[in-house]
Length: 286
Image 1 (cartoon, rainbow, N blue to C red):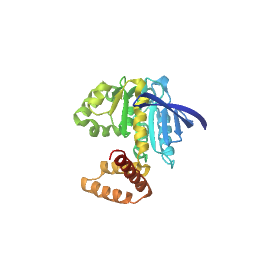
Image 2: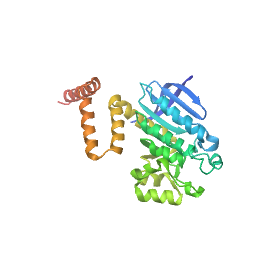
Image 3: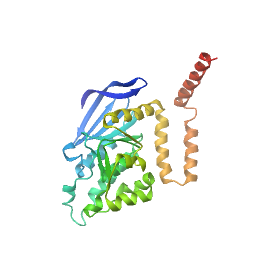
Image 4: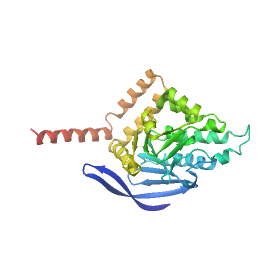
């Protein structure tokens, strides 16, 4: 394990500022995991020379990294990105895929699913920091994240049909993000779309110039850190329930989760701080 310091930019009312954090860094194959003292984990696909493409070994390492990081008790949020400034995850390794034999090619798709499922099962929000190309398996991985911030130079697409393959696995998440019509357009044509079009169809929640991407991600990170950690974990679990349950069952699950949170130390602390803030405002502005 390596220990180092990083500098994180963020926006203030007066412009940009920086924060320094101590980071604990590990690397397994092409996957780097860094966790700072706030409980913020940053996972990086480090294969920039090949647009951060993921072969089967890389997919396995990425899934295992999420599974390993996800059990850290002080974990608050995970940021997933790609190394360099050209690609988030450029897709699967096409050179490797070209060697797969008919009837013996299930491992690659299964590993793509394992990565996506590990992201969706993470107990805290996962933010995709999309710094460039986001194609195929990379787009499935981005769709599996909870929030997506992209550089305005990023490009997106599902090009599998151009290689004689259908889009599968977590491509099935796309309709809930961008609707059935836009999903059909992407998977039937294999065309690429730019960041502006991705934002317009709600594939990403935020686009910024590349030099502002870290600050945009840090804005979300800071907001999550300001909330109750147990409430955030409960909310992540509820969102998973909403995806698989009927409306009636989701409401019942929500009633139980909200009721269970009342009266806890976290709730008392945050509600007490809110009441104290209001009291001070009334005293300052009688």
